[in-house]
Length: 61
Image (cartoon, rainbow, N blue to C red; front, top):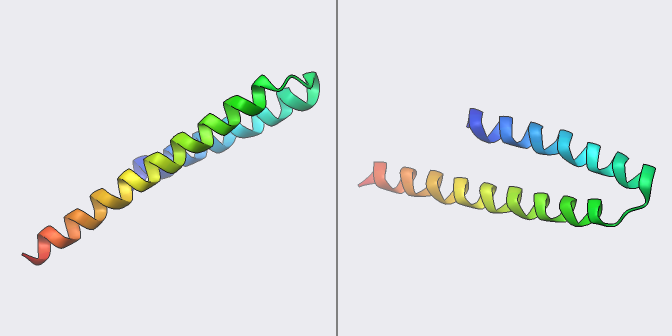
């Protein structure tokens, strides 16, 4: 759980930096990077959720 929280904090800081870079340069590549970062974080959250669910089901057996 600690790793997921740390990853979310780092990703949020990265997204804020990308937003600032986009506002400063108006270069759309920063928005694409932000989109890929969001996709990666969603994938990480889903993987963590499935791992957690599997662990809970395994404990019931």
